[in-house]
Length: 210
Image (cartoon, rainbow, N blue to C red; front, side, top):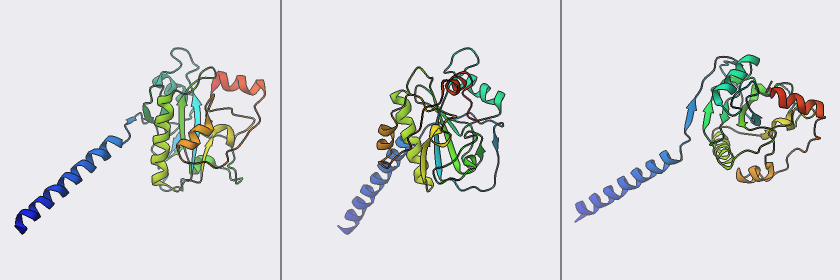
């Protein structure tokens, strides 16, 4: 009798483990490798405490949302980001998180610290001035940011415009308070003054992350 009971318990435990493993695999992020060797620097150790969200599109001709053309544009200006999220929600990884990506440019964190590239992970949403991020993009961004938060002690989740006000305006047309609610951050976020039309045109023409 005890033997049969032990067998039943073992079977139930095995089924639980199998179901848990299947559920875990279903929620695992599908990251598409697009590793680049430019716009980044390898480093043995860095303290990651910030996530910066950007917008990007291809301004060099052709499909403005094409990931390969966007990467080609990055290569021209020697910049990059750790991740790019396409219009259909696909997540592309260009730079490993352990390495430095040149995505923030001249910028400051709310505590006044500089060298934002050194401590941050950059995420680009494929978007343009005249459009908004898609729901699929926001869902992927939310999942990615939560995943990063589970692996690092993240102090700030910010927009590019938050760390470079007067110079950058992205991410464009994004409902930031809604996104912050999705990631469970109901704290205050930085309000910024809109750039001059000159800077807005520069952003529109070049959309450099550096």
